[in-house]
Length: 89
Image (cartoon, rainbow, N blue to C red; front, side, top):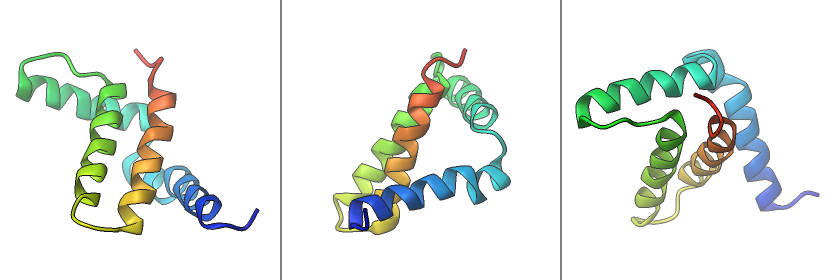
């Protein structure tokens, strides 16, 4: 399939398995590190799964200002990573 949705998802896949992972390390380590810091700051337990969901929400909030292919792509990537982080403890 060669349509916009497939290209966007393929780009998201490339990002989370390529440059982003090379820059930030394995997702489970990166999101757990973020969760620990957010937990300390907020004074409540935050999970890696919740970090992914909140990052996707951030991208959705940015889209309220108008179309952004980057925000759409990143949002899709965070949702995919949330699936992976759901069972990480």
